[in-house]
Length: 162
Image (tube, rainbow, N blue to C red; front, side, top):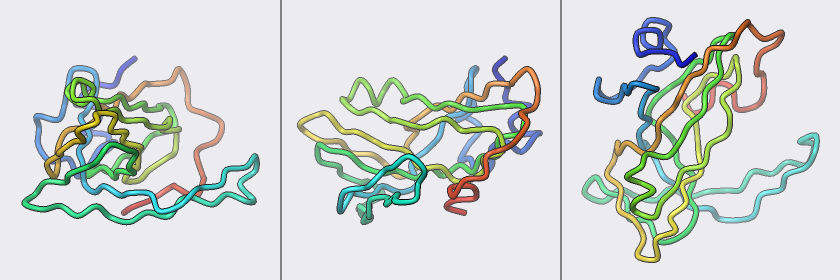
C-alpha cells in the first residue's frame, strides 16, 4: 500500500518540504538542496571495515542555478524523512530529468532510517544540465509493510545532514 499525503504529513514522515505542490498521488517530490562533485575514488568492502566514502566538493550556485557538466554528482535533498518501523521508501527520477538526459539513483530507505538523504545524480547529456535551487528532481514513494520489522536501520547514515 502506498502511503497518502495525509499519512506522510500527519505521521511526520516528511518535513522541510518547500510547498504543498510536492505531494503527488503516489508520493512526494524531493528537491535539490546541494550538489557536490567527486574528488577521489571510494572504497567499498563487505563489512565496512575498510569503507572509504569519496570526498566531495560543493558545486556553487550562481543566480540560484547550478551548472553541471556531463558526469556524476552527489546531491542532498531539502526534505528530512523519517521512516517508521512498518514502512520503507524508494525514490525515482522525475520524468523531466530523464527527458533532459539526467537520472537520479537512490538506495532503499529502510524502516527506522531518518535523515536528509543523499543520492547520485548522473548527467548523461553531453551538453550538461542547469538545475535551479530547490528543483524537483525525484519522487519518493513510501510503502507500508504488512507488519513492523523486527529491527530498524541503525547504520552510520541515520540522522545524516540535519
